[in-house]
Every structure is written in structure tokens, then in C-alpha cells.
Image 1 (spheres, one colour):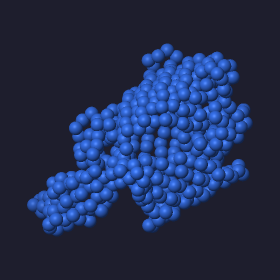
Image 2 (spheres, one colour; image 1 turned 120 degrees about the horizontal axis):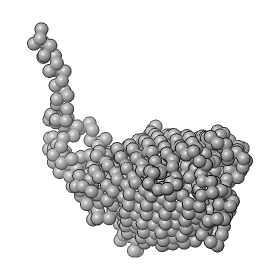
Image 3 (cartoon, one colour; image 1 turned 135 degrees about the vertical axis):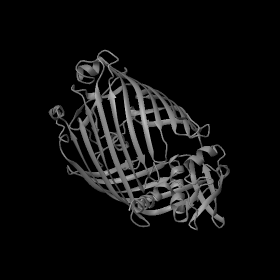
Image 4 (cartoon, one colour; image 1 turned 90 degrees about the vertical axis):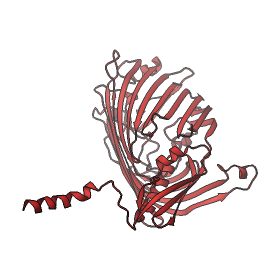
Length: 471
């Protein structure tokens, strides 16, 4: 009896003991060689890191297409390549050769910069206020050292003065699991929103600088496998406001505070299986983060705990039809009312159709959904005009066009009710909208989108966007 019992246990555990070991069969192929073409700057080590194919490892014949697609998606999300092709050849029974053909992007960008300082382009285009433009110069180096690192320096003037430096994705180990990023920003603003009335930002313009901001951040990222990221960040922020703003809104930085400063620590978990960062069509994104502002290191230090969670899901329904949906939640906990530190909807995230409005509060929830139809499948335009035809980074232009129908809904909760006194009727009220749109996509992650929206307060109109709505 005991002998039979032992035999049953051994037979049960045998598959687990073999897990991670490769047992060769006619369905298994050994990757004998990986050939890479077109990486004049990008290191092979970086490319090997993103490939699911590994030299001298076995792959199941039925998994080859999935591994190929996942490898292409990983390289696409690095944003280093305009075109990526992977071919596999079984040169003899059980032996596989992988060929990777890449077209790198242009990585050195001296910038002449012109942009608006509004919450979104549609809000700026509504009034076309030239005072709310910033312009400047800068330099960005992508794929520094051939490892996907980036360095950026900015100097902007106009409605604000901005000095900014960032060095992102610094590799700390040979296995490319550990990364470091540095970011510093100094901003002086002469046009500042100081209150929200009727769900519209009221701004003050001055010849003097009304708000000065200094932000320093050091972040560490850990990525062992392809899809999961852990980020730990330490930062310092310092804000100083002019008496003019304080006289208009004593709660701008907290009651009668001319200055707000704090150290902060934050953690964020990300799982990203999407096919693209820029315009995803398959996979999903989960991001959950918490930031503690105020560590008790400074007198009168600002204190809050900010939490954010978002989940976006993308599916391909047939050859040309896709569906995407997702949910975003944010909250901030602070006993004092601090206007400058509270956000909600109408900033980076908004209900489509409410681009002209903002709703501030302690908590916000946003739901987005849309069906995308591939009106024009990806086409490549070849430019034969000199000297562009000689520049492989620019002589092929991919173009895709998608039409969509969408539905959004959002809610901002203000526990104090302080925003209600300024006729902000969108606070503590459901916002919703529906509409149709078209997105035109080309290389270097450029998008031009037009939406025609109908919102829950009886308004409708055309809005222009430069980013995918669900990303």
C-alpha cells in the first residue's frame, strides 16, 4: 500500500520537477542563432534583453508566432525603432534561426519649442490666447550609450520660464534589471489659475512672476521580466506664491501660506502587456501607486497621501475592429484645503466633451471606452526626394487611420463642498459623454485626433487631441 502511495506521489510531482527543464520533442526547436540587422547605435545587449527568443533555448513550435509578436511589442515599446521585422527559419529539423531587421529612429533632437500652457489644446484653441504660449530651445538625446537611456535639457520662456534637466533609464547592472532616473525642474509663472468658478479656471496675468516652483526627483526602477515594473521615487518640492495670488485666494497653498515645501516618497507597480505605449490595440495596462508627501523633515511641511490606480484593457475583435476600455481612480488625503495641490478631472485626464471644464476635489473616478475601426491599415510612404531619400530614419513614413465611437463617464468627490460655493456644479455630479472620432497616426509617435462629443450638460462640439484617449 505504501509503495503504491509513494509511486502515486512521484508520478504526481514529476511534471513539477521537470518544469523549467526542456525535454526535446518534434514540437520543440532549439534557437541556434539570432541575427540582428540595422542596429547602428542600439547595443545588441539591449535588443537581446527585449527578445523572448534566447540562444540555445528551446521553444515550442506552436508558440513561435506568440513569441515573435511579444518580441516585436517589447522592441516597439522601447520607442527606438520605426520598423521592426522578425523572421524565423528552421534550417534543419529542430534547429531555428531568428533574424531581426530593425530601422532605428533619429536620436539627437535639437529642439525649437512652441507650445501652449493650457490644460489641453482644445481649451487653448477656444480663445487662441498668445499670452499662454511658451517657446524655447532644448536638446534631447534618445538611446544614449545605445542602451535606451535618454538625456534632455530644456529652456523655455513666454508665459513661464522653465529650466529642466532629465537623465532617464540609467542602467545599473549588466542584466538590465535595475535603472535610475534623475529629474530637476525650475519654473517661474506669470499667468496662474487662482480659483475655479463655474468649473472654469480663473487666471491672473502679471508682468511679475506669481509662482515659483522647484522640483527634484530621484527614482529607481526594477524590471526582472518583460511586463512588470517596480518604481521607488524620492523627491523634494518647493512652491512660492506672490502676495497678489494670496490676497485673491488665501487657501492657494493652505491658509495664508506663502510657501509650500515637502519631501516625498512614492512607490508604483506597473504591469504592461500592451503592444504599444503610444496607440495600444491589444494587451492591458495596470498601474497602482502611492505617494506620501511630507516626511516630517521640515518645519510646517505639507502632508498628504496620494493614491492612484488605473486599469486599461485592449482587445482585437476581428481583423480591423478593436475595443478599449478602462478605469482610473485618484485620491488625495489632507486635512487642510490646499487649492494648488488638489486636482480632479479636466487636466491630464478628462471626460471627453468636457475639455473646457475642470472639476477639483479629493477623489475622482474616470471610465473610458471606445470601439476603433481600422479605416486605413498601416501603409508606408516612401520618400524619394533628395536628401530625405538618403536618411533611413525619415524616408519611410507609416500612416494609419482609425475611426471610433466612444463613451466616457466621470465623477469628482469634494468632501468639504468648498467648490460648490463658486458655482462649480460638476463637482459631486456624474459627468458623461458619447461621440465619434478619427485618429491619424504616423511615425515618431505622432497623432492627430478629431472628436465630436455630446456631453451630459447638453453641449456638443469638435475637439482636437494629440494623444490617444485611452493609453
